[in-house]
Amino acid sequence: MGFENKVAVVTGAAQGMGAAYARLLAQRGAAVVVADIQADAAEAVAKSIRADGGRAVAHATNVGDPASCLACASAATQAFGRIDYLVNNAGLLSASFAAPLPEIAIDDYLRIVAVNMHSVLYMTQAVVPAMKAAGGGAIVNTSSIGSWMKTGIYSVSKAGVNALTVNLSQTLGPHGIRVNAVAPGTTATEGMQPIMSVEQMGQWAQMLGKPTAEVAAPEMIARVGIFLLSDDAHYINGQILPVDGGTIVRL
Image (cartoon, rainbow, N blue to C red; front, side, top):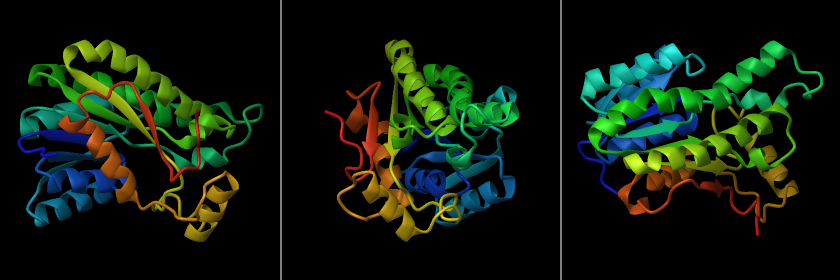
């Protein structure tokens, strides 16, 4: 799964799964754009990649703003000359604790949908011209097992990611651009741990049907996404892959 001479843009890459994606891609030879609204934290991740001998730049990106997404893609091509991969990882975990849909404030609804769902389209539109110029590419979106549950606006936004993944895969496939999604289960990210402890995550997953109390580390999810980006997965397109230790079973 070599990524030498390739360029990847990873959103939400200042921490958690995004940072894991960025570091693992750099270790495999890709140049990485660490895109995140938290500019200082994104620069810290990029700096750590460079310190380890990798190639990375940070870009302050608000994925809920189409203009900011276009600026991110432009920065990637200016820095590295091309774009081969996109990881649409940015999202708001706090959305899973928002008010029920009949009561949610419209401003909160619009903010969550913009970051969790619309950003997938915004970033994809921004990078596709460069991917086409490079002769193709691959995109991995971050969905969630919550997309198949009744968790209010969070499940609505992640179900939208699934629908975008399937539809984009069909329209971009003829251009040599594959689009898939990873649907993580409970994962011990920095964003999740203030909400519940790792032990509580394991207990919650077992309540949902998971056979063990193991909780994924961010790298466990990112490794699966990187496989989907790689040429080893060249015949996988338009799929939403649960990475949840058996929590969700779909026959």
